Length: 284
Image (tube, rainbow, N blue to C red; front, top):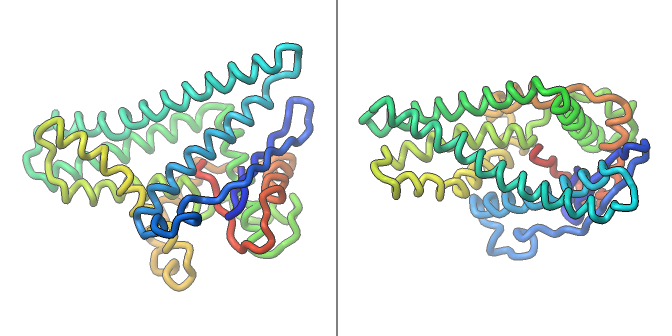
């Protein structure tokens, strides 16, 4: 999936070997309403939009994986419902695994200092996240997803350097990209530690729920950090800070095959707006 300021496009290679593309006009809320294009606030809205686009792209991708037969329409509806339920379940499990479980483990250890409590809580959260990434990377099918992830990055690099969009040109570039969604996630984990330190130790259920309510704020701060890291003048000073995200991409991106690069190029060309100079990498 690729996204430009005016469209997003999803390219899928079908079981028959064809590349099919869904191109959808899309203008971000922060571009339509200037009042929303405020630092930190815009990051929260961008996160919601990214989740929405991701779900739409997954739905389309899953529908193409269904073999064409007389029950095709029924299969697509069933696939969409199953995927929707999976997304809701995944979000719930994500909150449980990456926020609630670390919180409960830290409370069980009995720390009294608010600063120490939140540092330990953050360390647990980071450890759970990294263990989760390593665990799913062992899954054979997930490796293919990580290869497509690498193909997206390599194709973006080819575009940003002004090269002709071919598999041969894209293959010359790295699979690591600083504006990757993986980098965003690791920044979210680190920023959450800082934000929660200022909130002190949670003493009751209201305090715990308030921490969940801070997720949009944390996402907004993380979004601004990623934007700053992309600026040449500032980015060079932030290299040490973006290193964890690039290091994590050693797991979440893998060298793609040539046919995977062809799919990434098809998606990029579909959503390409020649007047735009910047494309957005999905949070994969």
